[in-house]
Image 1 (cartoon, one colour):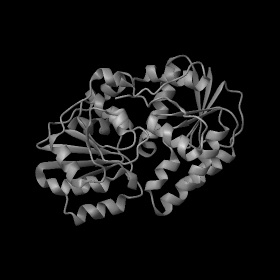
Image 2 (cartoon, helix red, strand yellow):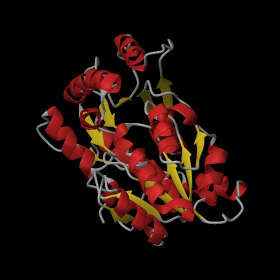
Image 3 (cartoon, one colour):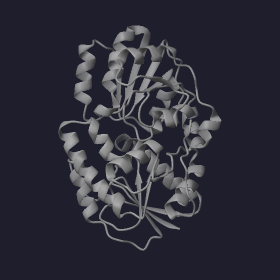
Image 4 (cartoon, one colour):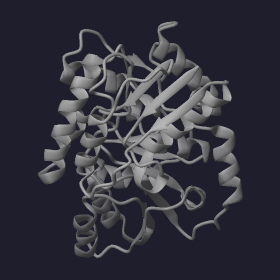
Length: 336
């Protein structure tokens, strides 16, 4: 089968974040099943990402591929095909402000058009499926196909990039710096714990300057790692004692799968899709630095490999193909 992927998400780990990882791993898994996957991406790079996305979509045309998959808002001018939502932009925008909120609101209108013009709509979690139906007035719940991870490859990268044991409890955050990620709550929790933890943060984004300023105000010694390579990211997972994801809005959270594969405990807000994806995590009340600080000190449970195996790339790729082509119904894959 010839499959066409439409995406304006930057095709590298440093800028494309979890969305890129999910798309890239899915493409490789489909190819390993004998299918051909081609990417259609923007040829014009602009300083304003939303403008780049809009121009890219205006240039899209129908093709003779067997299956066209548009991710998030990408593909909205086309009829038919598959709308595969990595998150629900209309849900995400509620937690943002300023220019980010303005540009994301425009993207959400495009995504709404996309899901109504598509032949099938897929979401990565029941939480996202419910938000898509709610915000985009869909007549039925979209089908659910979870995110995926190439377990053999990720374990190989982890083994190839060891780190020395930390001197003290090391907390790792991995993600983009948006308001909904609540990195500020993590910083305030770190201030409560003081020198009992070592805080290391991977990522970048619109809230970077504000977060660096808050860390200075709190007199925190934070290791800001910025955008890192896959190898360096694996080394950070190896170094970490616990992964923390304080986000109040996550459509899935691929970092949860990465942490599980690394055998790390997870501390997460009890919000959005996080309990659905990582039921054995140590959960805390969202937006509560004191509760987060307590959870960071005690988290020790790790997920079983049986739980993680359901997200392995070959398994999920087959589910994705079945849902995208309508060959069988797909039920929610992640149930605690």
